[in-house]
Figure 1: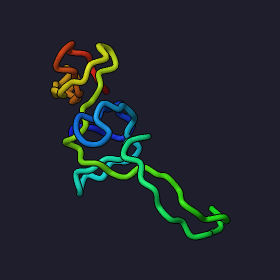
Figure 2: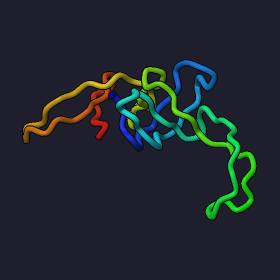
Figure 3: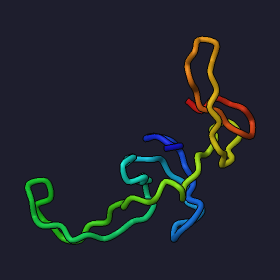
Figure 4: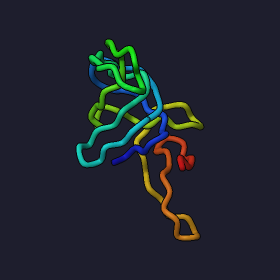
Length: 103
């Protein structure tokens, strides 16, 4: 997957197109990510110890990873990710526009 947990991403397609948020959860087996304040759904919650009242709660649902793009922290643009090897042999992600390191 081209994005990781904690990355700032922008939604490029779907109901929430144009919204930005950080990735809360990554699900590589299903090629999906959960982005904060994006794709909000309402779910019925039974009363439990954690939530004694129960009721209807609003939470984020997963969206397909192809619908999000990483936002570069230095140039503030959505970008594709390039991979480069440093002299130490470490592989890092870089911005295709400005060449800044994203890790």
